[in-house]
Amino acid sequence: MTTTAAPLTAAPAVLDRIESVTLSSVTLPLPNPISDAKVFTGRQRPMSEVAFLFAEIRTEAGFEGLGFGYSKRAGGPAQFAHAREIAADVIGEDPNDIARLWTKLVWAGASVGRSGASTQAIAAIDVALWDLKAKRAGLPLAKLLGAHRDSVRCYNTSGGFLHESIEQVKENATRTLESGVGGIKIKVGLPDSAEDLRRVRAVREHLGDGVPFMVDANQQWDRPTAMRVSRRLEEFDLVWIEEPLDAYDAEGHAELARSLDTAVATGEMLTSVAEHYELIRQRSVDIIQPDAPRIGGITQFLKLAALADHANLQLAPHFAMEIHVHLAAAYPHEPWVEHFDWLHPLFNERLETRDGRMHLSDRPGLGVTLTEQARAWTVDSVRIDAPR
Image (cartoon, rainbow, N blue to C red; front, side):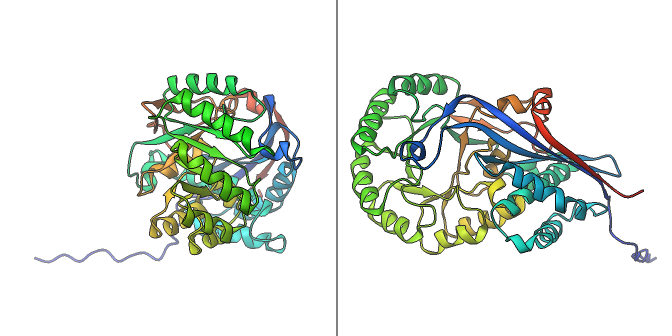
């Protein structure tokens, strides 16, 4: 006896539709003004707050997703304004079609470019769609993507800024390591490179030889200075030297990467996959440091991760650990994730750190929800609904 399969129907394969998008501009005040090398070289003022763009998406079937992007110093209102203009383009769409929706949004605002503030505005919506998709599946985002590991190496940056004395930086490092974080990064790039070396030496002696240690010059060296100081830094057994040159100087970074035993890391300030590809093409980095909110969200990050994997690069995403712990866990090569405690007031949940690693939770999606304090810091908000 034979049976005949039922014919496939021609009905549209739409699982759900986006009913509303709520956008919120939230200003997070920092407890103390923050200074890195850009302040000491006169290029920026101390940072006292961070502007966040949150996107909350709801579907007709009742699923919800939360995403965010951010801007340090200027740019937050521009991101919010751009997102407000284009968000209506996803209303009525199937939220599962994330890559298609990213393309639709980027072309909606293509006259102002496909990088920078325009794609950073898209990032919040894109992250929310990925959060929603993982929640629909009942999975942490890393598991939806396909995790290679359940925890990732992590290092702390927020305790190593230049506005604090070296004694305070050492105290911060001790407290950070006791909390379960595995590595310590401090800022360098002062006008007096001898002071940089003094601070690095003091922290290395404090940490001992076995603790992973990184430095970050925040783009403040020219090529000769970067070569000279980086060679001096090699004695401290650093995991990497970060942003020794201008973020767009792929050629200069490539020369450093060829010349040094210490790994060269950069990429956090770039705002598109295309810009990162130039670093990969010229072999400018040993460790690439993309920032998902800056390059347009998770959809773009996954494209870049595939390119980085093909080039056998190490990965150390910048900031936004609540997003990047998932993306790093899904990267084939053992990555690093940057631990910042600045965002703690925004989210009800905490990422667990122990034994030098940041651990995935079993919460679905990104695994975070907004605090009432975050909502109290909202300076502008708009909800875009489906027409009725």
